[in-house]
Amino acid sequence: MKTISCVLGPLPVDRMGTTLAHEHICCGDWSMRANFGPRFCPEENLLARAVEQVNRAKAAGVATIVDGTAINLGRDIHLLRQVSRLTGVNLVASSGFYDQDEPWLAGQVEGFLFDLLDHECKHGIAGTDSRPGLMKCAVGTHGLTPTREKILRLTARVAVENDLPVFCHHEVSTRLGPQILDLLCGEGLAPQRIILGHAGDSEDLDYILSLLDRGCWIGQDRWPYDGRFNTVASRVETMVQLRQRGLLDRVLLSHDLCVYLGFWESMEASFARETLYEGADFTYLFRTVFPKLQAAGFPQEELDRLMTENPRNFFAG
Figure (cartoon, rainbow, N blue to C red):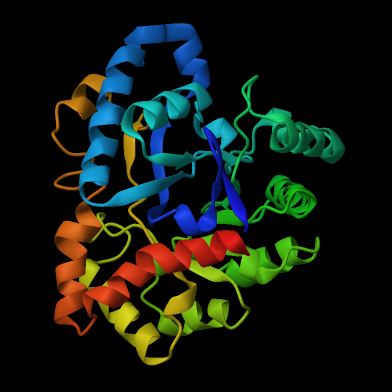
């Protein structure tokens, strides 16, 4: 039986259960954390908040959460291990680099970066025995810069070497999905091992179909951001169209929410809200989206399969 690496050890994929395929526990910059400590990120408060929010998901039936936080997006393996222990929810960590063209990525040789990622895939992250269950890369609005192309190539090679799937953040406004697939698959990575994240942000069904025609998976993973990246109504219509074409077996649903996202507000302001983003938390799909999909003709059994069989099949390869 194929297993997936969770932060507390390997898990048979048929025991993943209901899975949120793309979320974040903490995206708190490590430079800020190292220099400003609890003024930027009080770790006890973060742990308590993370446990509370993950337990909400658990009460909704979630058994596994894939944390898509790249190394330079604030991945905190010790926090992930604590949250998993305290909640009993399986957490999957990611390896790889986000889309910043940082000098230590832009100027560094590809082989050295490959070795860094390959080592933690084989031996564990940051001195722990937690191995990543997913490779993460990203292409933002600035497109495929030379640094991005280098990072995508080496990410694919690490994935192939360690038999891991790849989640690539991609902004649909760039319409670079086909080129991203060319780069990743050009290193020997099979398209069925790739998720093009945030593809559901697009209202262009033809663009989404063109990606699925290549054999990859797509992420419908930003449902709570109604009107920001796309509307819930548009996403529901896309789901209906994909269902009619028999393509739902390569769609992964999630929220892309974060317990603490240190981009635009302090932790104090963030934690003053009961939820993670406006009225949304890790239960938004179950509370808000699924009733809309049911009204559009999706039986509960089909929704359950989307949240269990699809993640299982993706990680089983």
